[in-house]
Image (cartoon, rainbow, N blue to C red; front, side, top):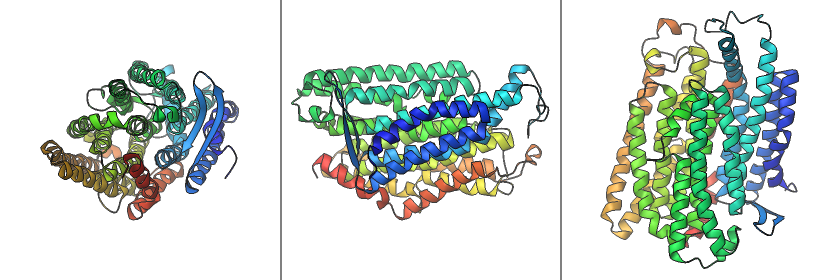
Length: 518
């Protein structure tokens, strides 16, 4: 394995982000895209190679006050890390046509130029347009690479303070990506994103400080070996669950997510929803289930109930949406409920299913957000009432969108089926073993939530791709390869994973068994 592989995977995108900025300003969007794509592809290859060899662990001296600076790629971290960087890499390609479209829109808006949809006629030849697009492209890809680095660093961290630093590192580029290039009142929504997620991070930090000061160190190993009093462990676990619950956007802490996902540039929505918010579930696995098992045993049933409330609320709200991106945002809330539901099952297979649901959500929701971006660029609208009959005009997009929707709905042979099967198997297993009426009820409600998921997914597909094509969509067609190729990669991956789930399960199930002592 390459020396310092994990360190390279995390920090090379950060170190080369100024290069993307400078290359973009000088040579344009395409050059900046290739810098970002090449860098992230190399980093992805490092992570995949390390995972294929059974994982990796690296430790570096840091400070006596905090402990070691470490990175760990094990059965828990590997699926999260791989999906984060796979999405970041392919969305770097997808970003090029979408963000050029966005930059040109903003150029026209700032100068009061009226343009028609489809090529932005009326903009060609405008003085300063090329320089404007180049400057914005360089800044976009630089922030994009820093955002990617923050997500991976959080997943690989082996120290509470290190985890917190990377966790906060995601927020700053995320704020600028929304505030600079979002739709609607983007600066206000960007601030909402920053305030909500930072408030959650502060609660998380309080939990970390309680644990670290009691354990006498912040390294995960020190916390695991320490004899933390049960009352302190429980209060710390609750603080961590609340802090991560904001990131997960679960019921009661979900307020920010529909606004942010609806406003963010679509490539960033396709990272925020499938990749970033699920890191909250990773944190619950690593910080509560693994490090505070006694507190987790007390909390599990409450996490289970919290998950089912989130599943049903998100699904019901998704059914009521007309805006495609807001529908997908509420769907993401519901899907995060599935993760919490599986974690709260407290069984090996239920928790393995929860992690598979993260992978499933990354693939399916990535496909659907990319579909939304194509509708914005090619159809000029994201309103379901103004769409219809596009399957004949955009066949590649339609096929990929259907595969994405079936993945989220849990229909075989997609990866979604394997995730949901394990999730509900584990939940029912725990309910029967404990003879718990409450768990039996939540299991039944979980099945109801899957019906909701199927309903809003099929309803969305029908309104976008079937029926009569409106006159104003007569020009619509599939996009170029920058947008199609990433969708085809994800669509193929979700089918392959549905047929052969041991690609990830071979590492996930033994890890969960080890943590739970099974």
